[in-house]
Length: 369
Length: 125
Image 1 (tube, helix red, strand yellow):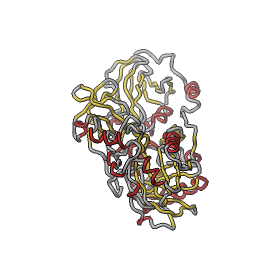
Image 2: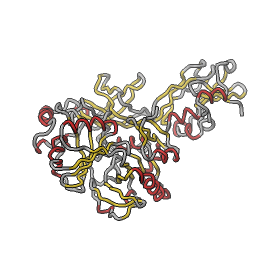
Image 3: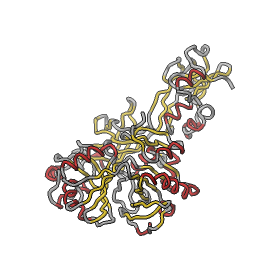
Image 4: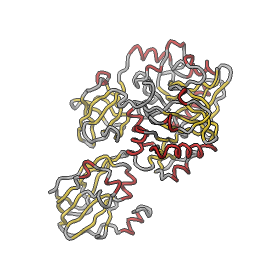
């Protein structure tokens, strides 16, 4: 039941009554109190998340930018030091190996944040396709996120001007006396920050953020609230909404593929896939009854198979079941009537545009933590 | 308060006179997480012990509900339509599901508190 790895905040989760579950091999809180309260806290005030399961990899040295340009689909030349970028890593067949965020620490110095379940696969792939030294810092560095409209007001950070940190920008600062790197990124559709801190200082930073915001309604939030928030925000989850059998155009992530930057791994197949156009597309969906779309639920139109649900949950913010589905491109227009096959019965639903809900995030550009 | 008995599928039943009140246990609601909705029968439905009489759906999963007793459903907790979270907040009180008029008594197959606690590793409450 429980995962094998524990984050530096494991004892904090237990002390807060976290209901621990396995997520990508890590033991993390599904929720502390109720998912409803945690979800609402993120949308109204702010919620604090432990993201330390996500992989953190540093790479630096002459030629680092050139090598990462060959590994990733987005164009790193577009970001200066102090800025981050959402990007994909594809194989030669244009299948998505992972989606990730690259932070440019310097001209040839980068931090890469990858999905927990892909960390070892990604490290092996990057090392096989580059001579650079990729340093896995996942254990020594922790990653926290404070997400919500009040995040800037309530984050107890010093020696940093948070208001001056742009969306997808980052800077160094201090929380509870610990040196931290704070980036204005997230996975909830709200404004907010992700905080890198040495793991031995992570519990103090976690407690400082909670105690600074508790009176205003900041709650610790688990995976349940995180999944609902990211679904409302239209942010994809690797392994559910995309995998190695999915190309970026099918995932609606063609905007992260910059074919003009020159050759890179998968660029030929990506150019062909783009020219051909996607045979299926991700769309938002919402239930029109009380049923919840779930991963793998068949989608039908007038009784005919039309795709499948890739992610779904119940949104306590919108008071309905929501999700994403992979469907024929014609069906990906908003407002199309579909049926979900739930427990042998047809349940009415419809397609909706992504994001399903737009929070306080400063730019509509998809974010990813 | 009448003594509660339990099923291995995590329903509870408490009998007063001829009427049994049925719900899901605290262990069940804690495992399910936030309950989103319940599909409950209409009053009048005849059930046998072990029959699926409804569905409880949480953020995590949908599960069938099994009747611990045989009889006729005489009342359904309508408040759960608007407030399914009552099952999480008060599973043995305001979060009850249905009342069943017993056709016989309560069968032998049900667990007492001690046996149910043992089944759930000491976490009946």
